[in-house]
Image 1 (cartoon, one colour):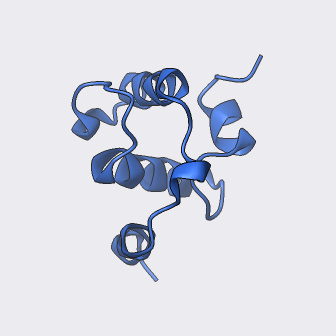
Image 2 (cartoon, helix red, strand yellow):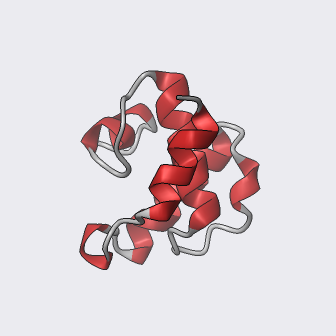
Length: 82
């Protein structure tokens, strides 16, 4: 399956609100993705919507992080873990 299929699956069954980061963490994720060239996110607004999810999915695939959304592997790859 290609990237588009993965994005469609993720968007078809979006994560629950309990799985979403707080707005401050979401903004940090969005800014880190933008710094890596994922500018389709738009403004870093702290909302993990479809454009942010698509960017995360593309980044995870490019970096070989496997399936998932926001986890420690993603945060580490974006330089967000201390």
